Length: 264
Image (cartoon, rainbow, N blue to C red):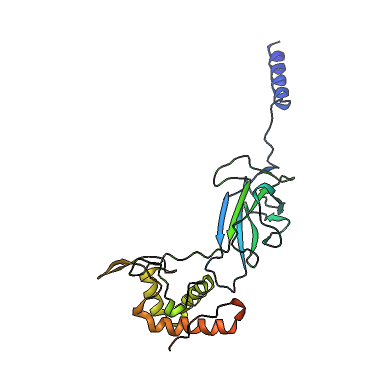
């Protein structure tokens, strides 16, 4: 009799384990998220020849990689947070893949420079659910099902200050302030790294890669680039301003007609 009761109890226990009324974990559909909720980019002082720029938005899944098949996912544009237009200001593929044996992917967004003007543009995306993934419900800085890109083509005046405390721009060497001239100047300045690396490295050591840092001069204290460095005036005239003058002569569509011809 005792054995019969014991067997009956075991049978009821096994049955109760097989017929649960609580939810069980289903690992066939797992969370997917952007690892950044916002990204900013400015064409700014990028060379004028750069007409596009690709931002790769990192995407990750919560869970183990699938060792057998790649899995696709899609996104949608969030209209209320977007003022940019596709394909005028940006382009993005229609679908994406998480490769097998991987938990990572990217969403490549190509930004178009030509029609940006002076406007600050935004495009926001949201991950969509499918048979493989659910967009995460978490809303942290590094875990979100939504992300937004802010981008522009605004060229701001550099923080250059001359000896008199005014905006430092050498009109005698580069003509009146002009954003196009500034972008072109920075482009040819960076090319010094290959043409005259010693001079380039000396200037970078003083003012930083984009000439936006202060230099501790033994006699004058902290100073800005100031629009020009007369210690390297000949090199700047020959290898920066000289090519700039020829460039503007060859590209009248840029509208730079008052760039002074260097005396080198």
